[in-house]
Image (cartoon, rainbow, N blue to C red; front, side, top):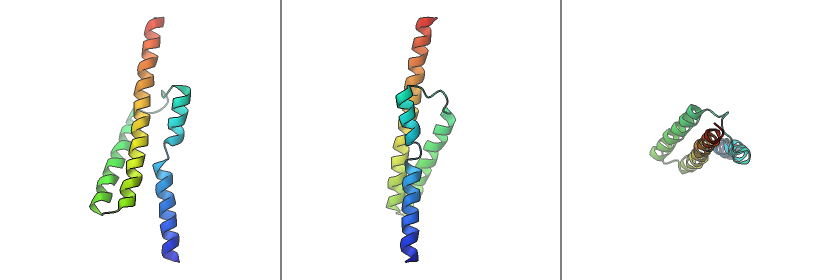
Length: 97
């Protein structure tokens, strides 16, 4: 019974960790702005995902790999949106200037 509870807790933690950035991605998409989000925090988060993917691959922990691939994709999307909306904002400012 204890092993089953441990697996459920681990799975819940993995899912929550994987989708941690998703609310921010949704907010960024709706507001068309990511100025308040640190570029370097996103880079560190991406690096963390890559390291966990490598670790999980080496340990043959497929659920760990899958969750971190999902997290990597979400963070990569956030980084893309940050760059996209920053470039769009710069073009708007250039037109005003």
